[in-house]
Image (cartoon, rainbow, N blue to C red; front, side):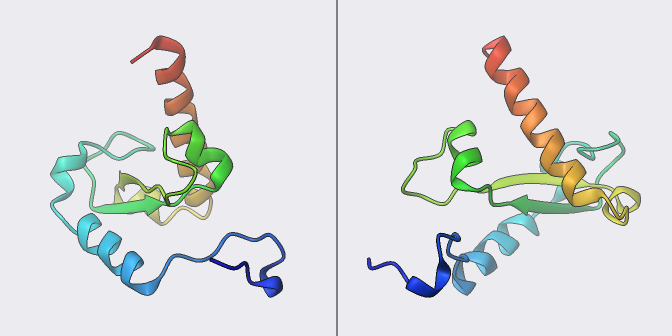
Length: 103
């Protein structure tokens, strides 16, 4: 696939079909995801993060595939203005801890 010269090295946005499939998967029962990622309360919603190539490798995704990390949040944490950076930071912290502990 040829690179789009207008993108200037930025990652391509996932297709609408891909995003809709992820939303459908995330819409499943939040009980499958345990507790809120940030505070441990019962979750009300499931979100997804599509890491950059650099972080995709951290999560063990193939360099040629788009990886997706699902997580759950309670309403209070989802409404926090810093929720997105906090989620990304927590996901990376947990993954690094898993790698160090060999879990």
